[in-house]
Image (cartoon, rainbow, N blue to C red; front, side):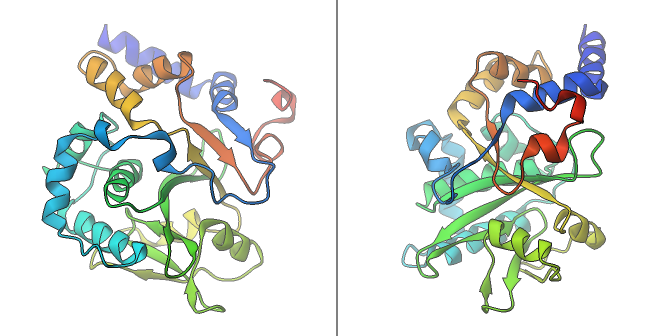
Length: 277
């Protein structure tokens, strides 16, 4: 049965039409001017629903509450990057994902983004999750990272926990927000990064691909951790993450991809299916 389910999942992932339709169902173009209030993790979640494990680990980080949100976020990020080796994808409930990551049993960019969302939420830091791709089907890469709001700097600041980097705005002697970062890259300016921990990605050249003028970023919105935790806790011993996410999609409780710099239909979809809904 398990082999059959994996084969079905593989067919859906590899078939271009089914792949595109799945993304059409969860993607949206944003037509507003400001993205400040789009996709905030706080909007879709409650502290009461956060697993106790996160509060236990958070007490070990011992964050100084008098610090600006950026400094708090960097303390969280540094702790996670020092404590977690990373590895293969986990993608389970938030509690089991954190547990496995701390036990040295894996963790990719999306896993790091998930747990970072929650730790920021616990510490009163406004946080968003972003994704980036080069194209929808047969991508060369897909990546997840985050953005936090700093009261001191009065702006959103991009942070990549998995790669242990932030992005320098050399001209303004500050750090970039996500939108400003990709706008700057598309203007022909070089990527300038700095590391917030001793960790260095073994594939440094990949950073230049992920963050380039050709990269298409999007906000991951409607990220309801309580919903995903409920269905993963209920079914993760029986079904693959793909099928559990499909259940959430069918129930229309799934996350959304909000494209803020590009028309995803024109940029990513073949002309033959751009008008599909």
